[in-house]
Length: 140
Image (spheres, rainbow, N blue to C red):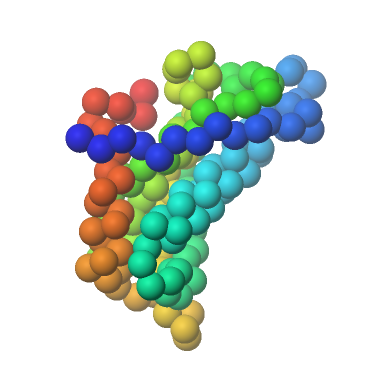
C-alpha cells in the first residue's frame, strides 16, 4: 500500500466567495499547485537532474464532495491512480476536518522537444508507481 504525497496548502482571503467557502475556480488553482509541488518533490529525489520534456494537462475532472470552507490551510493529498503508455492520472484530494471536500483527477501527458506526446520511460513509470493511490481511499 502506498501513502499519498501530502502537503498543507495555505488558503488566501481572496480564495473565498461571498458565502465564505472557497470558490470553485480556486479549487483548480489548488490542484495545479499540488501537482507542481508533487512533481518538484519527485525531481528533487531523482538522481541525474530534472524531468525530460514538457508536461501538459490533457484532461481534468473535479468532484465536489462538500463545501471547502475558508480556513488558514487545507491538506492536499496527491497520488497516481493510473499509468498508461503516454499519460498518467494524478488524483489531488482536498481534506478538511479529516474528510474529503474535493477530488481532482488530472490526466498528464509528457511531450518531447517537438511538442508531440511521447511514451513514459521505464524510470518515470517506476517513479510514478511508487505513489499509487491507496485503494481504501476512494474518491468518495
